[in-house]
Length: 221
Image 1 (tube, helix red, strand yellow):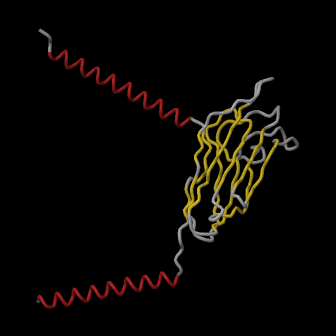
Image 2 (tube, rainbow, N blue to C red):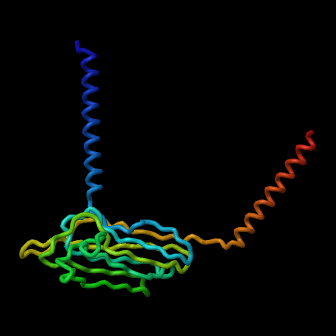
Image 3 (tube, helix red, strand yellow):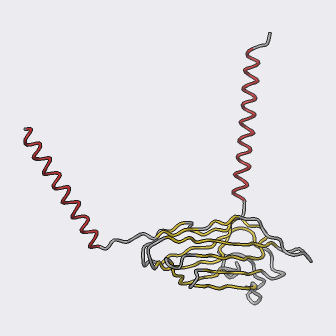
C-alpha cells in the first residue's frame, strides 16, 4: 500500500521545484530586459503650458561598444517650435554624453547634425575616429529645447541606428536596441479672470445650498 505521506511530500517537493524554476525564469527575463540597449526620449512624457519652454534629452542606456550613431527625432510643428539643440557627443568634452574623442584636436566625425524647424526634424549622424575607444554605458546624444506654440498633442518620435566598434578590416555591426519615443500634451492655462470667476460661481452655489439647508432645518424644528 502506498504511503499517503510520501505522496504529499513528493507533491510539495515538485511544487517547490516548479516555483523555483519559474522564479529563475522571471529573473532571467527581467535581467535581460534591464540590460538591453535603449535609445529613449527623457522625460518620456511632458505636459507644458502654452507659451512655456521645456527640454528633452535623447539618451542611450545600457550600450556596449558604441562607435557610431544615426538618430532622427520628429515632432509636430503645429504644437512645438524648436529653440535650441545642444549636442553632447564626446565624453571628454561632455561628461554626460556618448562616444569618445581621441583628443580635443581630433574630435568625433560628425557626418550630419541638422535641425529642420519647418518639418519638425532633428537628425544627427556621427562616429568616433580610430584609435578612439568604443563607448559603453549611459549618456545623452543631445539636449533639445522647445517652445509650446499652440494647444494640442505632439509625439517625439525616434528612429535610430547604433553601430559597434569595427574589427580590423571588417565593417561595423548594428547594435540591437529598442527605441522609446516620447509625447507632449499641452495643458490649457486658464487666465486669472476665469479662475476668479470660477471661484465666485462655486462660492455662490455653495452659499445657496447652505441657505437652503438652513431653511429646511428650521422648518423641521
